[in-house]
Length: 278
Image (cartoon, rainbow, N blue to C red; front, side, top):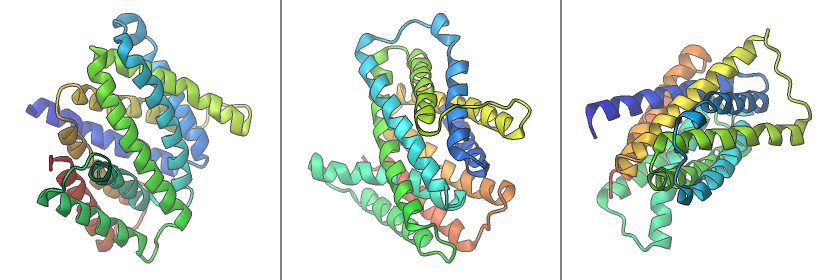
């Protein structure tokens, strides 16, 4: 990967951790993530008229990824209900490469390389360190974070394939955000009823900013997935775990204990080892 691609992916990782911090700090997280998704759809809409259609063969990937991402949003909201950013985020992000690697062993018969074994050990130990911390998240929050990691792995692989089949990663991204961003308000209305958007409220503007950050962040990742090996892109993206730990301490006033720093470093290092082991 070129320095430009690496720099963009690292910037995307920072943006991803930032919009998660906005979500965690919100009073009504389901409302916040719904507004974020709708904002991403609105921002993506003009590009539908400027870019060529993605190849038809990639359309099923757009539909599948949108469904997976709506599920991801619901589980992420549930995980943040009781868990802090510095606890939930590493579990949700770190389990993705862990599950992909272990799944390949049982489904595809792949062997674990020494680097992959080290990655499995680091991620597992890091998650255990967070789970058994004094201010550990609840069992429901931990399980929701683990489920979130499953959806992250699923939609990342789907988009890696879809972006390459599309022949136009930017167009694929725009259509994906439009479909997913339109679906999330429908889910919200089904669960809660009317979706209000008070423009004078600070929470609204935070959510709107989070939607833009989310679009930029994952848009860069999809573009990178279409150009570079998925494992290397995923590895760089997992540096967002470290960004989340710092953001949680500075902006959300979460305690940045030595145990949390160590756990975040272990999970990030393990995720990188897993993603680059093949």
